[in-house]
Amino acid sequence: MSPTSPARRLRLGLPRRMFSQVLLMQVAIAAGVAVLATGLFLAPLSDQLDDQAMRRALAIAQTTAAQPRLAENVVGTPPSPDGPVQREAERIRQATRAEYVVIMDTRGVRWSHTEPAEIGRHVSTDPSQALAGREVMEIDEGTLGRSARGKVPLRDGDGDIVGAVSVGIAYDSVRARLVHAIPELLAYAGGALAVGALAAWLISRRVQRQTRDLAFSDIAALLAEREAMLHGIREGVVALDRAGRLRLLNDEAQRLLGIGGEAVGRFPDEALGEGRTADVLAGRVTGTDLLTVRGQRVLVANRMPTDDGGAVATLRDRTELEQLGRELDSTRGLIDALRAQDHEHANRMHTLLGLLELEMYDDAVEFVGEVVGDHRATAEQITEKIEDPLLAALLVGKATVAAERGVALRLSGRTRLPDRLVDARGLVTIVGNLVDNALDAVAGTPHARVEVELQAEGRTAVLAVRDTGPGIPEERRELVFTEGWSTKEPPAHRKRGIGLSLVRRLAERQGGTVTVGEAPGGGAEFTVVLPEALAGPGAEPRAEAGAGAGAETGAGASAGAGAGAEAGAGAETGGALGRPDAQSAPGSTTAPGSTTAPGATTAPSPTAVPSAARPAEEETR
Image 1 (cartoon, rainbow, N blue to C red):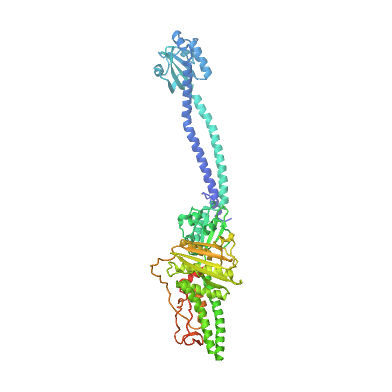
Image 2 (tube, rainbow, N blue to C red):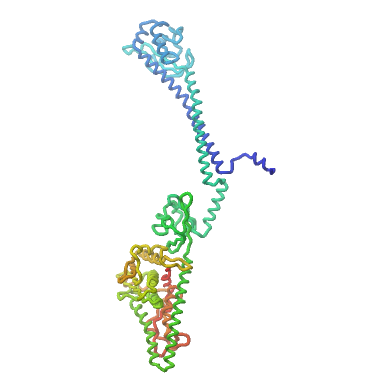
């Protein structure tokens, strides 16, 4: 046994465990309440008993004074121990168990008394108030000791006062009632205390289970550690109560969700507005690593219910990871496009070399012209209908990628869009997402085709993207816009299901709409309506950073059209869509080891799109 053990055993003070402290405090409170209630009850009890005794004496006196012929006997007979007045008074006294019933005349002389020897003598207390016609209740001393008294006047048939009646209740009986009530009252108080102690024990046991029998100091330490952990980690933590209201938001959760501490106590729909983020937090969407978009952030949410009926949700910011994934996808697309263009370019160079070795110079010139003309026609067709350089460059690049995938990407004959876009980058994002989804839908199918239509109706821009793919069943046409919903296998480095949700969010931000239906001839048709998307006719065309003019010469321009456009849509490269009328500078090269034939014109080469076009790839395809 350690030497400090006796001291510990003898140390006085509160127990450390919360269960013991709560039980002790509750029992002390219950005992204090019981004592206080007993004292508060006993304090007025004596006065109440006195008042009851005096009222009882007064009632007996009133009943006695109302007896018939009593006033006549007082007036018509002398005071005597055997007289009718004494007999009537004794009958009433015995019947009511009063201490005395005294009847007196107007002089205060007794006509009745408990002790016959007192009959004929003057009363010991002042009867003037009763003889004056007033009723009296009092505690007073008399010949028989202290008593509770009631006095009333005695009137004859004409209402004249001929005497008075005084009735007394022994004060010892009042005190006996009080003393008799105390044990019963204490018994009730003890019973209430026992019930209170039992209730306190039950409550303390519940507290013990809920707090896992921790001490107050342990709970305080845990709270301090929790606060430090919640506000120190770089993940958002959201706690909800049993009713589904927010009860805790750490600093990171407030930053990711864009709300403040005032949201605590509100439902997710009220604090965040309706949407997938609120549905995930409220538990209406279940699963692990659920994707959701909040503002400009891509979040991954996980929700775990708690034992008390609430829930805790964690939020991770995947925005940077998604951006890296999109850049990786763009880089892979660029590499694939360059590889395909390199292969095609090598074949053309071999053909041209053979024609030159065979001295078929005219055929060689014609071959170069055809190759250049095909790319020039594609770029000219797009730039004639799409005057905005960002959109035009995007579509030229997408056309090259589509061709490599065996898909025909065409512009509708009704397409006309002036260079007056208010938010060109937003529209580039929308078009890029929809075209990429359409290419994925039709890739590998026979006669694959994607058609893009852009029209300006006043200041409203209307976009339609049609494909010849399998289409979207009617019951799933709203699900495709749900964050995290996708029919495609996700790549290893990121998740899918963001693109169409982002399209709808961007459209709604500009007051527009996005709908999906069935295209003529089968397939899906996405329609985007953006009101106020174009500036007024007199407005100055907005300048895009990095938008300039450049050209690639010779046969190598075809590679630039595909690879460069993909780089513009997904990577940060300079330059812009080339001018269709650009001429090659003397001696400019088309590819390593080859030069342009004299007089040959350059192909329109969107070698790169301004970095502003990058939002087109900001999705998870």
